[in-house]
Image 1 (tube, rainbow, N blue to C red):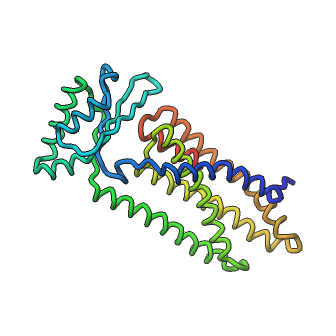
Image 2: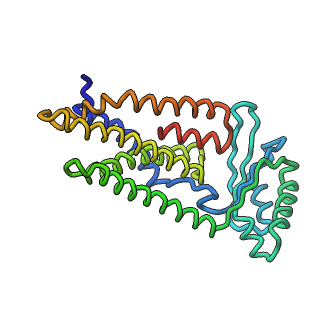
Length: 286
């Protein structure tokens, strides 16, 4: 029989090697918040000559229209076509329009004209704008959603395992296991956000909540088998019962996750942009 529980400290060490660097990057650099959480405008464009898209040229265009602060430039290359997409991030267009008592559409047109004058003609791939009020509301709702999910999971498992001694421990342990999976994903988001400039947006939150669902589902399957074996294997140590229960449910856990991973991998190969990063976070979490 595989001695999984006896080697648990090796698994703890392996998790620590992933989580601790993530927490370090999280504390030092934080998460690169997208417009959904931080607010602001994001303009994705394609230009014939990306060398013209300099910090000075873009800053001059944004300043001419009345934007405050320095705009950011993020360059990305399509892995399939090799075409370069330039992402311009700055103050929210809605905020600028309100400050100048103009229509949103007028500010958008003015910005396009100013950019054309500085960097030449370009093709708009996407244009997103989120005001600070909406961003604050999204952030607050995201935090509430995660907290409520944890509370309901704790209550549900405590009630479901009430026939087992110290049933609340199962609920608390499920939350700890869930937080472990969340920290792996969030830590990697901080690392990749620092090096690859991947932003945390509403899709990231969706992926995180999905991972929480997978995590708790798998935990409940194992806990349920432990509860059954506690009645069948009286006389054995609790450690051996847990180890036996893990082995009994291992094939189910792997098969359930593997079917999702294979499907998501197929999507990831052909996806682009935000969908590709969304699927990546799902794959990592699962």
